[in-house]
Amino acid sequence: MPPSPLENTARVLPDVAVQPHLAQAGVLDWVGMGEIEMPVLMQADDGRTLSSGARVNAFVNLKRGDARGIHMSRLYLHVDKALSSEPVTPASVRRLLKDFLESHADLSDRAMVRISFEHLVRRQALASDNSGWKSYPVTITGVMDRGHFALELGLEAKYSSTCPCSAALARQLIQEQFEADFAAGKPVDRDAVLAWLGTEQGIRATPHSQRSVASVKLRLVPSFQSFPIVDVIDRIEGALKTPVQTAVKRVDEQAFALLNGQNLMFCEDAARRIKAALEQDERIGDFWLRAAHLESLHAHDAVAVATKGVPGGYTSLPDGLASR
Image (tube, rainbow, N blue to C red):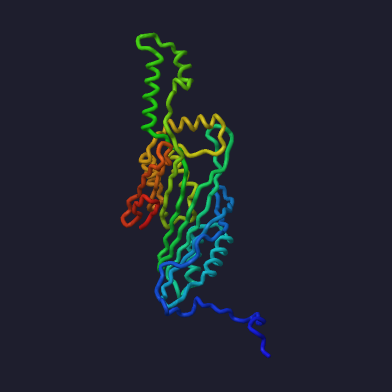
């Protein structure tokens, strides 16, 4: 008696995905897997290899309308192999997309991968000898469309913004308090004024500040070999002057207060600073940026968006999307 199908370990398993699906045929723009949990390796500036937990989206199109579906397990295995074997580079993303298409040669001619993770960078305190870790959200998106390769680097950096209008209103109240406490026409004692400046009654008002977020999406020139994550973040933070801190002693907090006082900015000011900084980087062919001030005065955010203005490049969409 021949063995039953359940006893035959070499049997061929059914694959309904490759069978014709004529009941409701049609091509599909993208099919794949979303939010794959995977470690990702990145090369740090000092040469070390850093590992972070990532979420990966892997897709191909389905160009054959009669095909039931794609081979999702192949996408997963390609992602696992690529991200586990070497740090992510523009070249490795391109190879991964080619693997997607080669494994779906009869089904697809477009492929996409998006890798999202937190990139940790150790930052020095402003004034003390301390340092600490900062986490920067990073998204790498690669698309292979009928032989054309496109790559995008997305970054976020948090900073502090102090409102210029609020600062002016606070200064006015301090002036009025000074006028009330030091009568006109009478000699002003220097030591008394110094003591007054150190009291809550003297500095009776302070401007409002808030944690803010700079989000950028970059199209880098084709010649680059690695992702300039820290370089771009440093350029953005250097332009804004008030990045949020890690380890903070009182001397660091005072230095941070000074930076905020010397860098009053609306969201429009922040966006212009970031734009000018990105325009000076020759590695960036096109960019989209969003400066969002998470208001402490309002229950809503103040937002400014800008692009480089490349013909046929990014369009400005204030809702956080960037398209070509």
